[in-house]
Image (tube, rainbow over all chains, first blue to last red; front, side):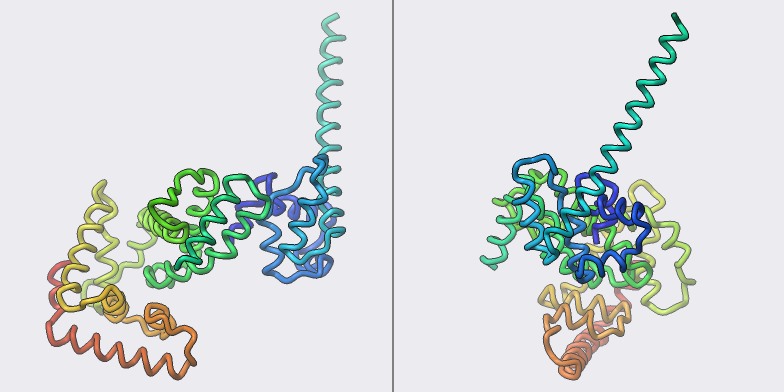
Length: 110
Length: 213
């Protein structure tokens, strides 16, 4: 309950989990096996907020989520950082494409 | 009760400070409990489409999560606040689902179950539909209140009138879900017989029919 709605919001781990499933082409059951968690813990995790990977307290926040959901810290760390880096990379690529297009337009004007 | 208030306040504080696991805890603590209550109070809607119940609970929880200051701890506890919000959201959802529900409406000569509940939902087409329904529910409660002294009995009577057959819904109202199945069945039967006798003795069903026709 609620996890589906959270999946639409990048503030929540539900969003990260969906992205991860898409990237890795995995099913929810496969991911649950990877995380060694129950369905209940999976949904509890989905409704947690994503800690900022750049923040100083990232490890502490991750550990808190890990204790609450009974999912190992290193697994959470791996998934969050993997999705975070892919999102940042694709966002940077988009920015570059925009910059290149803008430069091309400028050159044509000249 | 005190423990409940304390837990609710603690959660409210966590949500206010933007804690990472606060929303998850909120669902874990109250989600199923509130859904269970709505399923009992709106058993017909739950039987038609149980996802309506969960949508209402989600809307109430997210509404509160996005605007936590709408909850005033001095006025009520968090569980009750969310229950009221979820019930209000469910009523709104049911009003929007009117076409679907009207399509389900049975002909006039079927059992009272259909007549009773469908009559309560049939007048959503007018702008005053909700008001009319609230007014009708107040009248239904008024009639039942003449013969049943407690809220618990009124809720049981509504289940009997709507011809609910599942023991679990009665058990929930009677708060005997922890009892064994056999004990629950016996206790529910005892209460149903008592309620039916009162309904028959005072021709309550006939009064309700007159009210809704």
